[in-house]
Image (cartoon, rainbow, N blue to C red; front, side, top):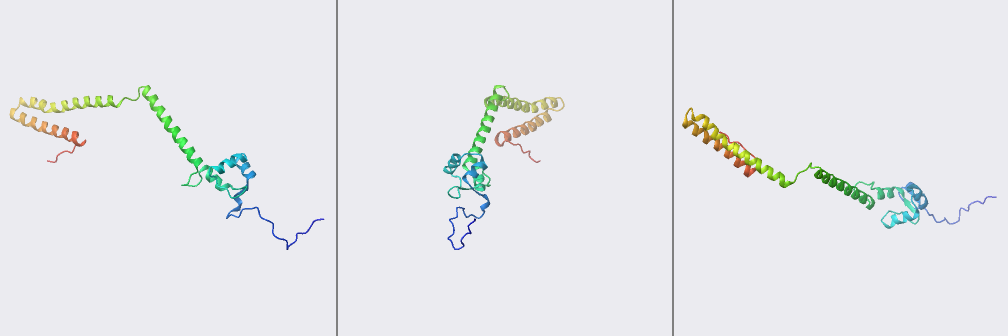
Length: 176
């Protein structure tokens, strides 16, 4: 025969945690089953800062946010560690790719580039400075006075351009 519950009896102690959203709060065994981990692992998570609702009660939603960094700005230590590890591996892979490219000869040293550019700019300067002389030589057969004036105009323009490039790294043509 079934016993009727006495309405006047004192209420039993409630083991449920009162939260704003009880639907996410589960027992340790249910939480272990949800994450596929042992109770020992869950205990280790708690030691590392995992949120716990009370004795034997876990809020799955908060645990997921803690473990996998589901919240926008507040990443869990686990998520930060995973992100840092991924960044480290990417940087290491990029470093190895550069080493391989150097070994294959696809990269050259900065010293070699500097030496090549110095040589190139010296040849360019000599070639540009020779333009005035070449024009004067051609015009000299027509009129020697005009040849000297043309040489001076061209030499001044080339010298001005080279000076601007050497000092400022850019050339601005004078307006006449």
